[in-house]
Length: 293
Image (cartoon, rainbow, N blue to C red; front, side):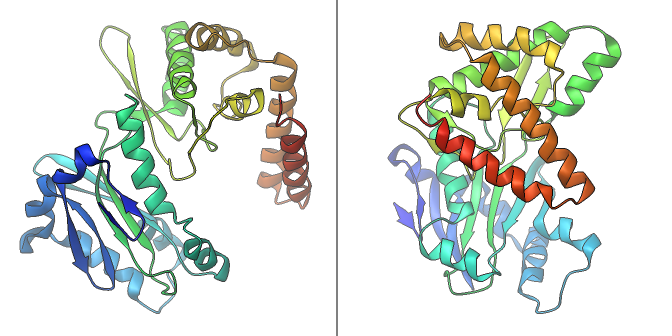
């Protein structure tokens, strides 16, 4: 079952139905259909219809336009938009590289692999030649915080740091053992839910760029490890847990070079320096050089 590039695994197809919301068409979860389509619960429609307005959004409104949440029957639902304004975005969508559809498919494949990610409940696509953004709605991962905040809290409290590092190393190892390469894994795209007995449950988000790969080489592994925002001294514990989960020893010299490059690129972006473009080019050259390692 598919619609405009939105593919459903056969085992899940009966849980969804097609929906038309001009100028969009898409798929909705039957469990949420009554709630999301009732007249009393359609604030989300008003918000996404703002994207049809020809006026420019003010800077303070852009975040609301891109991502917002609503609570229905004590359950949170997040709505995220993917713009289709520039010529390059429309060409990419014409070629089948639309982000909402990719996020939809990746979410279900991750769920099938036993990796936690928010469950998608609504996907809306518009034809590639139209300027309307795509929309994806997904269930909230309740009582969670970003890995950035969780890591900072552990530093402040001085307790449980080793357990956290071991847990995140094992989680990323599980992701890579399933042959998934996130390509944009950072401390904000990894949600953590801590329990009272100091165990951690992870949820991976922002998955539209993820790819299933035949071979997880050193470059791909390190690419997903360098932007977690942890201190270099903590990598020893994380890499040991990662090795235990995957049986693969990460090349520490490549990791060190990648960390240096990531820090330089971040500093250039913060300063608004044109050097950031050179760092991006050098990163791609390094990617080509390390494809076989």
